[in-house]
Length: 153
Image (cartoon, rainbow, N blue to C red; front, side, top):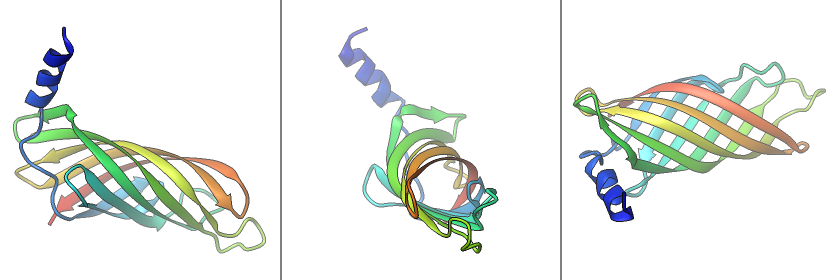
């Protein structure tokens, strides 16, 4: 199949709607807590999450990501729904109440994910994985996984 044929197939599968202007919900994984997402430009969204950590050495985690949506990769599914893959660049802060151990940690992360949006209910289901590097207090690597549910407002 030619490049033009592949491009036309990708554009034909494109969703006919966009994510909600603001979506809030819950996330399970790293962190466990609240999440929100808001579009910034046509294909970019801001994702943020804050909550408690499952890791023993951390009490709370907050993340902030700038993500690029790729809605044409999967497109329309299940009638009123559509799926979008995304990736981005973000920041991660992990707080610790035990200052004797490592203390608070700060770093950068690269998240990858997939979201399912339902046009009728304004619900988003998502799964993400993020790989990162911690710079403060010392260099370390991190990997996180999360599942979540957001409701469009």
